[in-house]
Length: 79
Image (cartoon, rainbow, N blue to C red; front, top):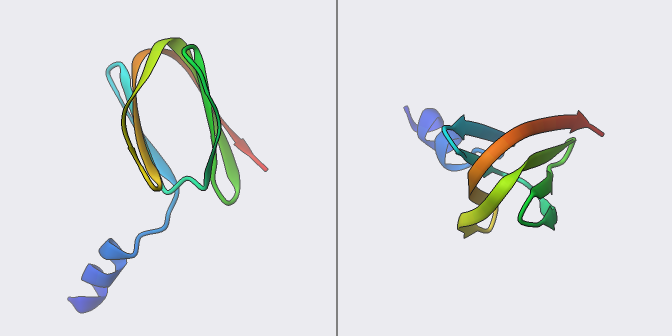
């Protein structure tokens, strides 16, 4: 049981969840760009590009971000 709790608390896996007009990204390493129509983030081994209109940051923590707006395209590239 303690191992599961430790895995949950120390989760370092880069991932993102897509909702209607929202994307939630966690465990990214840095923000490459953040503009009204596109945003890019880097993890250890991947880069994610989000394209859309009226993109707005709703939450920004150390390694977590929520962006809302009209999202038209999401690209994930391996480095």
